[in-house]
Image (tube, one colour):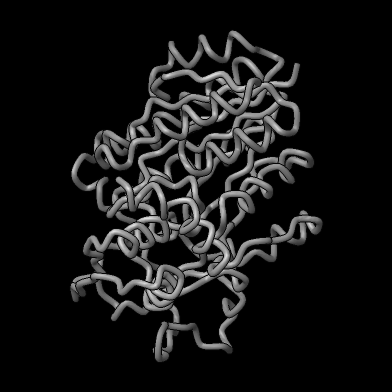
Length: 355
């Protein structure tokens, strides 16, 4: 029996991971206590996704557990022991805006929770593979000091710059404003690296850009494309914060991200780090995303512009994927932004319009 433990299993990336590994024949153990509802309210609840997973995948077992609870997590690890072949740690407090409202909760979930998962990995299944979904916010606002050029609908980097194909892992994480969320994720990120480098464990850190897909319970504070599409369908007001709405994000579909995790699982490395996002294949500015949503829905977005940008927010982020593509040349991106938004729309249109 091959077991995969997935934390945040009812969330966007967690649920995609559950489906992927179940389809590969694993018995998947999910850990998720629906803290997304606690963070962002009823609309962000992932209960619907949990129920869908339990109904559709008979080889899925769900635990309503808190990743900060060492004793509780130890019992789950102990139940499966050496049968555990992979731990994919996706659970997190994901919003840098929300983190400032409760720094203690943010840090204990993101940093302490990761330490609990790693220590139990070390105690129960050290020969397996540990994968952590980190964030590009570990780089703080350093990307905002790149030589950027203002175009009609977006900011772009000077094409002569070394990061024209995307920001790679050589960018410093020091001397920058991270946001408190970024700081807690830095702590977790470095811990996962260190358990690889210090103990020789097979650990991988994936620093995501905008992660998206139809399983996202998008809210105002987290879930850019999902929430934008929801507002376009319902007519709810959407707020654009700063940078003239020209801020750029690369967007990676949850399937493409989880497929990259699978490639790492098959040929793991020790203490490795990758920037992982849509890259040059899948990216858009806020204005470009709004135009696409309006085109897909046939509706005008009700939006308001606020000149004040969010603290630590990136003006331009496109992930450099060269390192991962060199290590795993068989992995390919399959979703671009228009395809992602069309899929989100098809998932949301009936549910949202009848809610």
